[in-house]
Every structure is written in structure tokens, then in C-alpha cells.
Image (cartoon, rainbow, N blue to C red; front, side):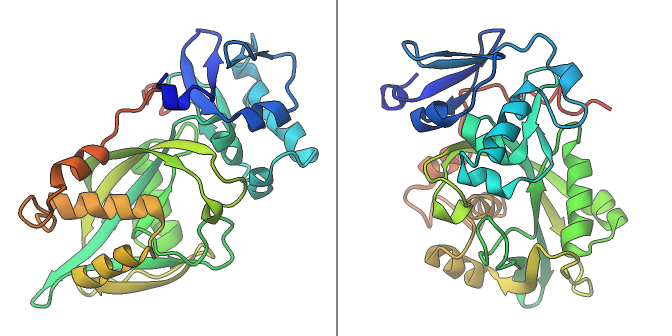
Length: 296
């Protein structure tokens, strides 16, 4: 572990591999069960439930039982945003936990982010949604055209099709036949007050990135209460909003990646181009294998 991170606890599974970083105050407040071994000298928390998969059918593994207790005891504000949605622990062969609890353990989480855009005589324009002002995380901020987390057992492209229909009223066949996979963006996020709950929680993330070029006669429209509105914006308008900090932080990263891939953001117009591009694809210190996450 880097010296700057030495104050953190490392979250381990019984195979001894690290899967996340935990803040000391989180370790101190968590109502641990007998399935966990907390070693304060070596600053580790090991989960050693001998039957984790048998406990994952409804409320998640033995990890989730601890989160359920923490929620009942009101130990952490972040658990007030309980989703009843299980996130996988990558590389763990099927162990899951409640989505709202993932930043407490600092595990890698995964999502899909798509930029929908049009091209015409007026140039490129990008569909930009504004998040609902009632959302518990990043309310009223700007977002990517379609975005969402990948639940346990879900494949990235299936998640994208679902999110596009639920959030943007995009026909499933339109996305299935026209969305283009464009790689990933990875980063290590430290949550601030806009994320909801405690600040300073650690959240390494990988986003699967997609592009979707649409004809000018197709409009994105909200179809649930997560999105307040959609606007078709010029590249300059998007860049100005990014500079003002109007975008949810990880969505701004995905747009930077989009601008790089489309030749809008280049070494000729940005002196820190190489540094920025490399930071969009950070190597994370934990497993990122999808093999155990996407089984049918």
C-alpha cells in the first residue's frame, strides 16, 4: 500500500487478496459479526464466512447481514440511501453486497455510461440529462445521456439497454443495434457531500463506455423519476458546463474520454493531454475481473 494510504484498513477475503480500502472510522463503527476478523495491528478486515454464496439469494452474503444491522442501528448516513440492489465483489466468485454499502468497504463498483449525440449542418450536439432534484446522490447535476450501475449477475450491455429504456425512453432495439462499445474509464473517487452520506468514503470505479449516434428525429425523454429533463447541447455548451462544475464528477470524465476519442480534445489544444488521458484509465489495486459477475 502507498504510504499516503497507510492509515486505511484493507478489506480482504479469506483468499488473502485485497478487495477494498476502509476508513478507520468506518471500521470502528461497523457492528461486525463473527464472520469478520478485524486486525488493528495490521489494519486489515477479513471476511471469512464459510458459506457466503448460500447466503446471497435474497439479502446478499454475510457481508450484507452486517450492513443490515448497521442500517437498523443508524451507524452510517450513506445507508439511508439503501437500494435493495446487490453489487458484486469482482473476482470473488459470486459474493455480493448492498449497493449503498459498497463505499463503506471501498470495493470496485461497475457501471455503464453512454453518450448519445447527433450530427448535422449545425455540428455535433450531445444529449445531456439533468438529474432529479430529489435524488439522494448528486441532485440536480448534469449527467451522461444514459448511465447506471451494473447489478450482480448483469452483463454490461444488458445493463445499458435496460438503463436506456428506463431513463431516456430509448427503444431497446435502437440501443442494441446502434450503441458502440468504446472501452472503459477507471478512477479512484473520494466522495464529497454531493454524493450523499459520509464524506471521504473511497469508491474505485470502472465505467463501461458506449457511444450512440442518433438521427435528429429521435429525442431522449425522461421515463422515470431519476431524470428531470434532457437538453440537446452543443459541444461548446457541454464544455462550458463542465468548466462550471455542473456535471456529476464521473460523468465529466466520461465526456473527456468522448472528446478524446472524437478528436475534439487533442494534444494541440491541451498542454496536459497525456496526463489527463492516462488518468482516465487508472490501474486499480483490486480485482476487476468480470468472469464471476456476468454468469447466466
